[in-house]
Image (cartoon, rainbow, N blue to C red):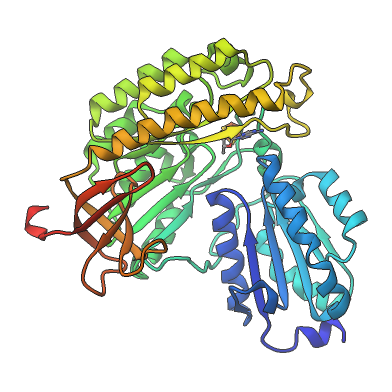
Length: 454
Ligand code: 5AD
Ligand code: SF4
């Protein structure tokens, strides 16, 4: 069989996504484009004719898992040849050494592309079909932002919306500026148009995505739009009830954005504010451009303006040169800040970044020991924050029936707390009042409440 015959009828595709929301959304766009071309999406990788891996290179374990899963496909590829297509894309492909490894060790991969040209996937599959040769097309940097791409959303009632691409911050541990390129903001009118279409299609909640949304600068004939202006513009769209965003760099979070939390009911009272470390020496080496006290002051300011706001963070343990004292500064900051939740990471060497070249790497066992102590402190604070919700009535956007317990729903509060609760049938996609009756470290439990009390 040739690629030509393989692509002649409705083929099933499967996408495996590693990494962040940005990657998840890229996968939704790839799915949207393939469905528009007549392909059918399947949840089962085994039965797929086309398999796509959307990779992440932020930390080492994601790339290990990718190579492990890719290797499992060799047997099927050898048996089915052109009847089975394997595509790899995403952040890892922006690194030449990864592309070289794939060419050398996985030469049966059919299509390789990067983060800047996901819109080319249909074309690359067509070329594979007509030219009968492997397609490798990785762009070094983002060119024009491509608008009007379709997306197959995971949920009917909520959606991600990219507002910008890339990052200019060059934190010394991070690979993202190299894999996603320099910052580029979408035009506000393009974002508004997309959100209007989403609202017309039943979307109630949008999550605005960017590596650092605080540096959003939308340029159009009407002038410049900053991130807070954009939020107000989107809040005017009828049908959109909730606006969230990810991620926000503490160094340039504006007072105007804090005001937006106060003035704009639709802006959810939740902020993810990565601190990364609590030691000034480590923050400096990380090139974060704030001190631990700057961060404390910022959190105080946000909480003074919006007392009910939930705050989460990212923390890296074992950055090169981190001493026990440095780490204790991080623990201290975590205990003081009382986060609602935190993503904790073991520092992992990312080839090509400044921190990777340092000789004072922290031994693995020291990193692990610190990591466990940090997780304990974070969990204690999450449990405490969650317990404070018991007895409250919260507006919950219902995502669907619960994966963990049969007969219950799961959804999110305005403050992004996960709630498992009982209620009558047909609540999916609605915002309902839920009385919180229980709390643990990672979620709340409850039951639907009389809406008059909300
Ligand atoms: N090692 C460990 N964690 C990292 N992150 C980014 N790069 C690394 C790395 N090399 C974490 C940061 C960032 C989150 C998305 O991933 O905490 O905020
Ligand atoms: Fe990476 Fe720093 Fe940019 Fe975030 S702000 S993507 S951590 S370089």
